[in-house]
Image (cartoon, rainbow, N blue to C red; front, side, top):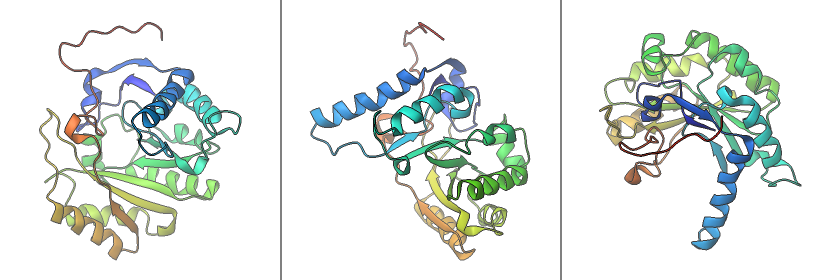
Length: 245
């Protein structure tokens, strides 16, 4: 979606680049076409799911992301069913969330912490209290008649305590069926954060479930190649230039 990111989330290496450029919708879709071609050449399973996640904030490039979604999901475009597409956002503002109402995809909210002070440290550009954003997310789920994925990147000793699970669960206690929690262990970067041990991840999941929520731990992909969530960054010494913005 973008080259770099201006959100500068505390655990994410991408933010250290700042925002360098927005991708055009054609450039976004080109990544899907390349992935399809690679899967065929390498005899991998065909591409089924597309996730707008990794480098950049979709709502900071909303016009081109919306156009990419329209072509991606159109039968005469790339023909990917909307149920196989997910857009992940930190919810930069209440107004920005309004743009998601009609997008043909699933929506994932990067919560990370239900404690306002902790989330402000992890997502320093946040403009609203967590409770305000959670209410807006629930309203969005209702208007779209669709569950929202709530993502939490868990960091050892930062946001992985039982209290953190309780706070997250209480945000949505009025409508637990409207959300699904996806839990991810933080991926190693030069920022030095450590992932929680497996037993803490599972305990966090089980505590959310005890509150009546659907919760699951997601398996990391690409970590061994520094290509997982939070690890995407221009390598030191790399030379590149933006041809067009």
